[in-house]
Image 1 (cartoon, rainbow, N blue to C red):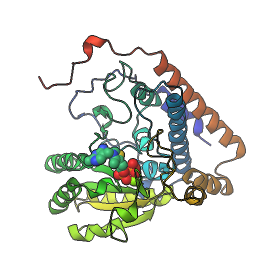
Image 2: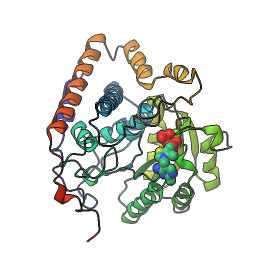
Image 3: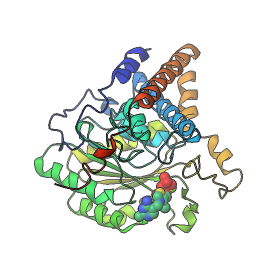
Image 4: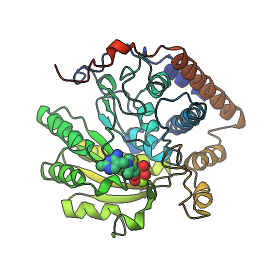
Length: 358
Ligand SMILES: Cc1ncc(C[n+]2csc(CCOP(=O)(O)OP(=O)(O)O)c2C)c(N)n1
Ligand SMILES: [Mg+2]
């Protein structure tokens, strides 16, 4: 089992904060060695998916601990329950592709190459973070990795991401854009404007609706009357599919098809990935409005447990290699938290820098 090189690559990472977040689109990104070649996941691929899902969850757990210790500057929004959707989808992307994630998609950031160190620098609002301490969570852009994190305004990133897809199509780059929105966020006007334009212009665009049953305290039955959010796709004349968002292999395979279609110039796909938000909206929300038993029901479909069981029964994972992965992830997260904690806050006189366009 080849987990050591994987961990060492990931831990070595890039130099946190060493690149300029104002740089325009990176010109250097080239396709990397293809994961899931031919749309099929090899055993090393499946182990890598397992590693990224577990890493995302451990990062989230550490973020929650820091929040409870009063060390986070802002709130804590975990992707617990969403790991298969975030990791499986981003795994279908190449280096040249663009990721426009939302606030449950830490796993997608990590798969696209973001380091745990940069994630914690960002959450702890340090001066050497990607936003130089100006904003926390995933509200950052990292052009060198082609990650454009969400702004707070739900839906606002969809037309932005479609604009990037238009630029890519005009430049004939062969790259695609993967964008995410929540069940709640899918009700805003920009969803329609962005997806309609992408469909009409047949842009290389994939939109994933992460249907995790709630938008803050509002259950899906009070958000939309349709049976499935993917049904909206036919209104735009594009393919739409609803999938079990706790099955990472299925998420990957579905997204890979959508990516291939987009790369061939055949236009966008709408994917509704159904899962459950296993925590409150944020760490300050006890989710007492969630009906009793619902979380327990969904826990039986925990995306990480599901893959772990399969890997163990296929003998791809053994108790020993599992322990090694766990230790590697713990070391990676501990290193990132320590590195970020020891990093200085930005100097006060820098507060106005980069806020207004020159
Ligand atoms: C346009 C807009 N309205 C309201 C909010 C406040 N808000 C932030 S997250 C959120 C819930 C989003 O729910 P959903 O889209 O389902 O994503 P989830 O948090 O469930 O993953 C709300 C209401 C916002 N950020 N932007
Ligand atoms: Mg939701």
